[in-house]
Structure formats: C-alpha cells, structure tokens
Picture 1 (cartoon, rainbow, N blue to C red):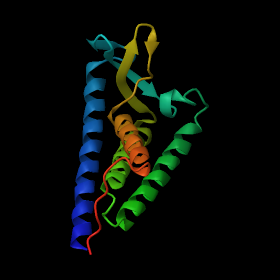
Picture 2 (picture 1 turned 90 degrees about the vertical axis):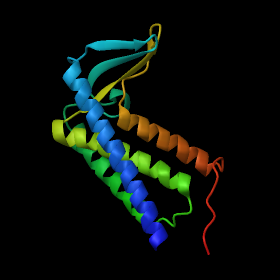
Picture 3 (picture 1 turned 135 degrees about the vertical axis):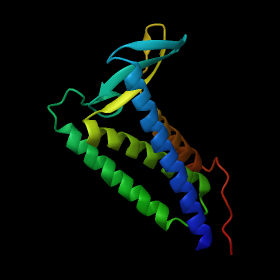
Picture 4 (picture 1 turned 30 degrees about the vertical axis):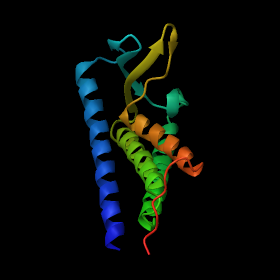
Length: 165
C-alpha cells in the first residue's frame, strides 16, 4: 500500500507540474503576442497566438457554440476515467501509468482553458516552406507523448516493472 501511494504521489506531482507549465506558457505567450501575430524562433518553428474554439487542429472551431460544453464534458469524463484507472493501478505498469498521467495533465490543461475563457490557447507552430502543422501547446504535447507511450507500451516495446511479491 505504501508503494502504491508513493507512485500515486509521483504521478500527481508530474501531472501538477505539467498543468502549471502549460498554464504558465499560455499566459506568457498571451502577454507577449497579439492574436494571430508570430515570432520566428527557428527556420521551422515559430510562436503564434491562436485561440482554438474547437477540438484538435481546430476541428469544429466554427460550430455555433455547442462544442464548448461538449468538449468540456468529454474532458471531465476522460479525466475522471484516467484518475480512477490510476488509483486502481497496481503500480506495476510504469510506462502505461506515466502515459495516462501525461494524457490526464494535457486534458486538464486544455479543460482549464475551455472552462476559464471558452477556448484553448495554442502557440507552437511547426512549418516547412508552405506546409504548416496546426498550432498546439504544452498540454497537446503531453497528450501526444502519452498516446505514443501508450501505443509503445501496449505493443510491448517498453520495459515492464516486475510485480513485488
């Protein structure tokens, strides 16, 4: 039981730090840039302030407003399911559990935006020539990394922790 609490505390600290980093970065960009303006950082990377009222990549961003409560509800449900899964975890699937924490932190970071201001603040833009990837944020990176880790873990490509007797 003590071992499980130790893992849960570590996961909570990781998740809280990611949510704080996400909020801090969004706030810093909003204080530094006007809506739609950008700063080139590298030949393929720029900071650009985008207010995303939809889901991933702005999906449904132009909808009539129903998407805000819908995506907020989805965020709450997904976050609740992940928390329940983590609390019930045996602390033997480290990578799986870390992946869930990353997804949870990202979901909470974007959920905070949706509830607080009605949209998600995105600010990282990758591009090459005329090609541009849709803007994203720290929460989105956490979700993406968590999803990749989940796939790798489920395919058995990450080491597993042995259960203690």
